[in-house]
Image (cartoon, rainbow, N blue to C red):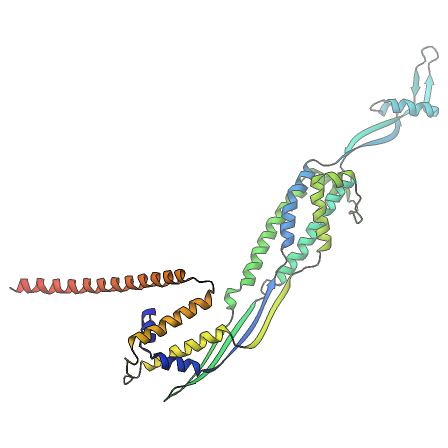
Length: 374
C-alpha cells in the first residue's frame, strides 16, 4: 500500500470516531532484549605500530663501546706494541729476555698485547633486545586468545509483544502482535572482526621480523644474554634519547597491560514500555482498524465533512512534527509541508502524463487501423 493510499484512509476516516478509538485503547507493549557482544582489546596493536619506527632508528644507529682485550703473548705473536705494552713490561721485568749493554736494546720474551674491538653488548642494546622479546611474547599470547575465540558468536535477540483492545459504539476491536529478531549466525560479525585483527597482527609480526634482521639484534642474540629486568637503569641515553623515550613508553604499557582486557558485554532487559514506542504502536493499531473498515462496503465513506477530516490530519501531522522537534518554527513547518506538497503533486502529474501517453498510443493505433480499412 503506497503512502498516498494510507493518506486517503486517514482522510476518509471520521475525526471524532478515530479520536475516540485512540482514547479508548487499552494496550500493553512488552520488550525483551538479550544481547551479548565481545569488545576486543586491540589498543596494543596501535601502540606497537607507533613505536616500531623508533626501535628501527635505535637498531640502525646502535649504542656501542670499545672493548680492550688484554693478553700476554710471545713477542713474535704480538700484533702491535703500544705505550701500555711498554709500561706493562717495565713493571714485569721477568718478561725481559735480554738487554744489549752497548745499545741498550731490550728483547722481551713475552709482552702485553691489547686488541681493541667495538662491541654492541651495551645495556641500552640489551634493553631494546629484551623489549622486542617482550613484544613477541605479548603478541603470541593475544593471538592465541583470538584464535581460540574465532568462532565465538555474538548474540542479539529482541522481541516485542503488543496487545491492545479498543471499543467503538458497535465494535470491540483487539489486536496482538509479536515481533522477534535474532542475529544470523551465517553473518557472524565477531568472526569477521577477529579475522581482520589477525591480519593486522600478521602485518605487525612481519615488521618485528624486519627488526630482528638487523646486525645489532643478531649480535646480541648470539651472545645469549640475560634479559633486562625491572628496575630499568636510568642512563643518559635512556632518559634523553627520543627514540628510547618511545621505547620505554611501550615497555611500561606492555608491563601494565599484559593481561587481556577483552570482555563480553551483555544486555538483558525485560520491561513494559510506556513511552513513545507504545504510542507509535497505538497509532498503528488505529491504522490497522481503519484498513479493516475499508473491507466493509456498507460503511459510509463520506462520514464527517471534508474540512473536519483535513483538520484532523493536519493536527496529527503537526503534533508529530512538534514532538520530534520542540524548536521547530512556524516558518520551518510551512517549508516542510510545502516541500512535501510539491513532491506529491509532481508524482500525481507524472502519473497522469503516463496514463495520457498510453491512451494516445492506443488511440493512434485505432485510428491507423480505421484508415487502412477505409
